[in-house]
Structures are given as structure tokens and as C-alpha cells.
Length: 171
Image 1 (tube, rainbow, N blue to C red):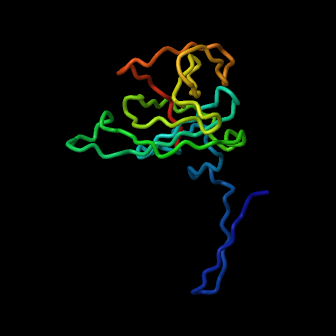
Image 2 (image 1 turned 30 degrees about the horizontal axis):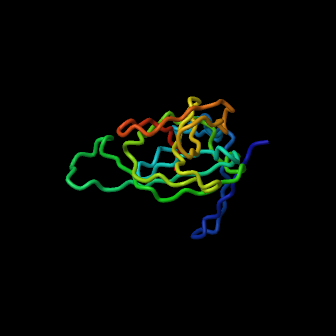
Image 3 (image 1 turned 60 degrees about the vertical axis):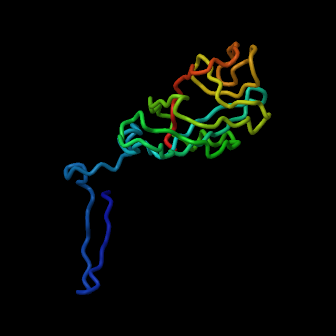
């Protein structure tokens, strides 16, 4: 059975049937695309990241907003700088409603300003990165267990100027 729609022309008081049975022949695709990059371009005005608390394994969301940099005229990618908007605790259901397709879009920590404490345990930073590529909170140098992959990770004292790339979300 073909799907049909009915429209009524109010001016003439007549109705006509519209068949979408041959939608594919007309170039119309009613199936959702699985490639997120084809339908959802990244919003360069915001940068969103997810991490997990190293103590409770509960997720959190980091949100940064693009800030104007005085004295720059170029619109190149290297001109994007982001200021902290907030760090929000999440429930596990967040991942059920989020895209699982990786974006492969990264942002360097040298392009962001502001590192909030963990909303779950109060650790000093929410921007510690495991070798699995995921973010977690950290309270300073030492060995911690990654809440994403259960791997032991050793963090050392901060090295100024040594940033790293983080994988962005759609935001």
C-alpha cells in the first residue's frame, strides 16, 4: 500500500491526492542518514565536550562559547577561541539521546579559556585526557583509573604551553 497525502485547495474547494509511492524515483529519500556530518554541520560558535568523574564514573558536559579576539581580522580556524560557559552534571540517558557517530573534529586546549572543577566530586580539573581519548576529572598529579576504559593513567605536574586536542561534540 502506498502512502498518500491529501490537500484541499481552499480557493477552489477541491481536493487532490498526492502519492509518495514513487518518491525515490523523484530523488526523495525518506530514510534517515547515519552519517551525522551530512545533516548536522558543526556550530563553530560553541564547543561541547563530555567527560566522566574519576571517582563516581558519572558523566558531565563542558560547554564553551566562541569569544571575539581583539585585534584579529582573519576568519581562519586558528582564530577560534572559546570561553567557559559551564560544566553540567549529566545522567547516563544523555548518551541514549546523543549521536554515536564520531565527528573527528578536534579543538586544542590552547584555544579555550577556563577549566571548571568536577560537578560530581569537586576535583580541580575536568580536562584530564586518558590515552583512550576520553576526558575525565583529575585532582592533580598521580595515578588514577579512567572511568571510560578502566585503564590506569598517570598524570604529572602541569607543563605550561603543553596542550592537547579534544574531540568535540555537536553542541
